[in-house]
Image: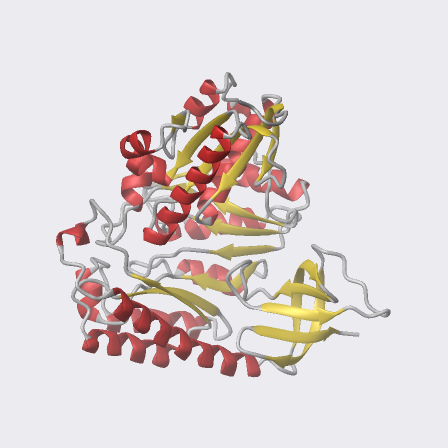
Length: 438
């Protein structure tokens, strides 16, 4: 029995997982709004008639968060606080049949490419004229910008190809038009995302075409920063670094998940590269752009990882001095190549190894940040927190990287979404502090 009045045609979209999922939710919300639905993203009030959960199915922790969220809204439906509950995204793509049996309260499950079917269930039309349009959930001055779907890489640990399919590039013309529309809305920073940016264009242009895409997007008036996320190291197209070096709109920033620092482990992971080749790539990139901020991601506790392998990764991190770094503990995923091997590194050992890497990285980050004290840097301001304006340099992406804090005073005023020059006065492990440059 319903305990409260639900707002008819109101949809609450809940997003879990990565920026690619957020992008998909924004596209979905644009379609729903065009079909006269009242749409909110992660609504504060439980008064929506319909809830759509866009799930993540990447690793154990993410899967559990998705399941817990579905169960929470299933309970809300039983209590009459929700009328219809739908689940979409990666977890649903991967475990649809199991989820149907385990959580019957869900009205329907949809995969990662089932948006037209989801809309049809809601008696809504898929509007082709809206392709490229989104209802932004980020602050209005930046947006994630997905340039391709799926992945053709054979990495042994990764279930993404199972959930997202083969690599499919979006044509340049379509992406340029999307960038123009976002710029017209006030977006100044585009964060290019895909499972592998470097594969862009191979399917439709028969060549790696990321450099041309970046150049074309940089020509859009209003776009001031272009940031690159998720580049694969094997076969990396160095013409992208040339564009980054010569084009002031391209942030001197590259997110390149390397996964390990041991050639033995890289071979087991089917990464198509050795430690030696990885180190040479990093040297080549830094030689062209010494000031570049390199972000990477590593995996601790892959099957068969010995203390020697881990020490190699530790030494690799110490040697490479990455500006930004994150670590996952290995997650044993069904239907991946690695699933045939025994998950033989105990959970506590995985965590100890991850913690050791992050402690090392904390010290590296502190030393690198100290070198910025005394510099004057261009900062894009995202929000106000307490008595500080909070922003980022071109070397930092939202949510995952360093922040710049500027104390509010009677003499300074910064409008959110604006750039300002900041003189850095102090720094700690992950943040910079400064004053507006006069």
